[in-house]
Length: 271
Figure 1 (cartoon, rainbow, N blue to C red):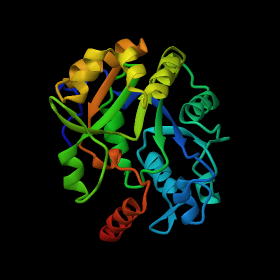
Figure 2: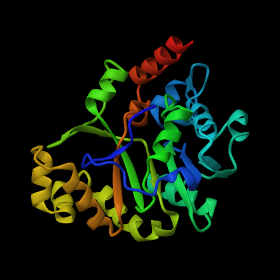
Figure 3: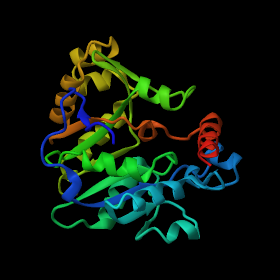
Figure 4: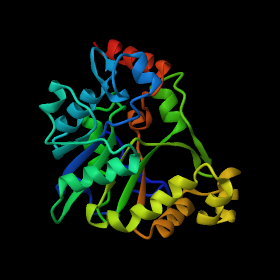
């Protein structure tokens, strides 16, 4: 059994965990039809690239079902017949990450008290046990919960893996490829999240959104994770929570051939 999930401040997740919460899921399996990685493997989008002989998205769907925590699944993007058997709602690809997220959540039409897990289709190393552990450790008093993984955890689990990391005062982290949200509050934070994503490659615009002092501390590794969490909450206008998860698969997506080789090697070793 893994240790309890933690917030990025190093404190245990708040009381009121998700074990008794009804969960639905949105799987983001859309993408650019001209994606060279997908095209090189003879499929429309990345989530359909075979890993261990099956679409990587199918591994994700099986992990969600096997967790025993997820009820309905809305899938955004093209599918296969094997995948369709595990999907409650198919949603047309809207062409952008946030557009697909919004469309998937709307399709679920979650009822009061229901929360939504959003997961990308390109993390085939994710297991049912890991999904269950992350959901059961998530606090229920935040509009947005985002898992992060320490660099040393990723490199210990998958030697040679290459990820994008952020160096903070409390450690070096990579972001997860899944997150949890309260669908009743998505309308409050989605416009601001769209602004942040639009500014991510424009330093001056980004500094205007998050503040030059925060940006400088982030770039120099002097920003604490607790301060960053508080800043994101203030920026989005809703309570947010970050989880430090011990599961490297959460932060290990497959978006190039060396990642695919790593995933194939992992499944081969598990046989």
